[in-house]
Length: 170
Image 1: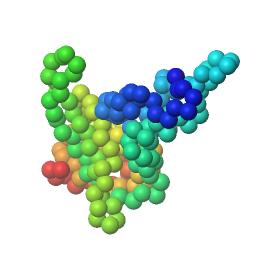
Image 2: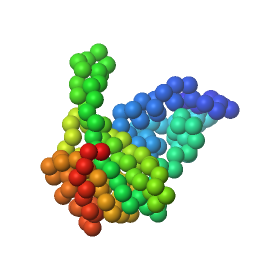
Image 3: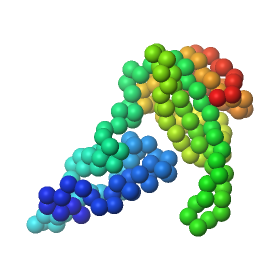
Image 4: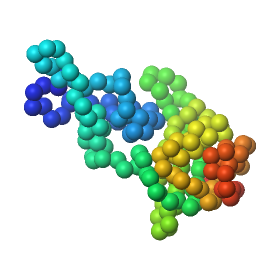
């Protein structure tokens, strides 16, 4: 509940950052409908329009332009997954794959396009990553630098059909 004239929600920033740490993009967090921000009125409660966007932007220190990137041109994209050990709350240590998508723009600058977490690396998950990148505005990929994961070149070509595949260590 948001009190009258209240500007910050106690503990909300931590919840937003926890969603982000679980692998959700800021766009997914902003569109989360299970989190409702409401204000008490005489007739009950009413949702506050745009409050989720504002709260998410405040938690991340400003608006995030990386959600949708219309017209963003990254002729070279590098895709790889890092395997790290992670301990869940009061649980055993497990290996997790952190998927990384790195773009090199026309100026030669590197841009982190996204990070995702899964149980293990697989071409099927990569296909979902490529579709998400395309829906976020990555129009085309000229060269994709990837490791030798089986099925990865086919997943790239399914979303970006004219891509040249460069096998290398990323």
